[in-house]
Length: 171
Image 1 (tube, rainbow, N blue to C red):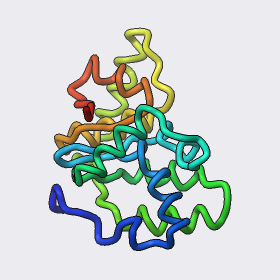
Image 2 (cartoon, rainbow, N blue to C red):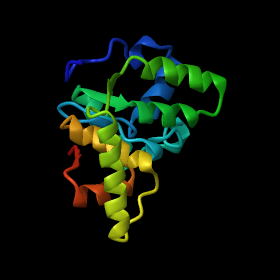
Image 3 (tube, rainbow, N blue to C red):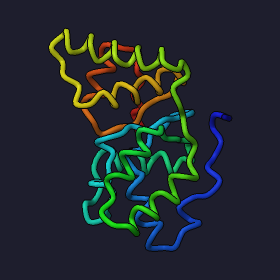
Image 4 (cartoon, helix red, strand yellow):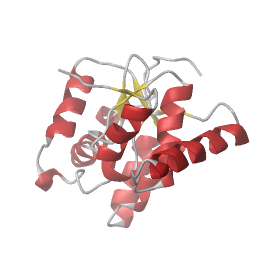
């Protein structure tokens, strides 16, 4: 997988109403960096619907798109984004777009899962609760691939204070 490559298709390849939905859907949920991964749960489609307007994370992702910074997603982000759809049409449209994106994966097989579990365990021992073990897996993907993570989930900020997770802060 080449780092920094652009997706084969973009939202511009979709119908105008679909591209508006896709552009909003992908804003904060996709990670970005000089190579990127995506956050998950809180990047869900509750931000995706244009009626919800922009928030800080979606504004950051607009800047990523405007600067043509390569980005990608993880399988976990893919799952959580699709499961947040409210209709068959949303699901088809979002799936068609997400299928064109670069995907980043865990590199260490089962050991990567064990390392994510250790992150969760160590944070819990420090009195910090992470909302989902998937957050630790997404963080692990970013760490193993030396990526920055763009997110709208305070769990990632907590993780980054105790582990070498790089958070992308687009200005």
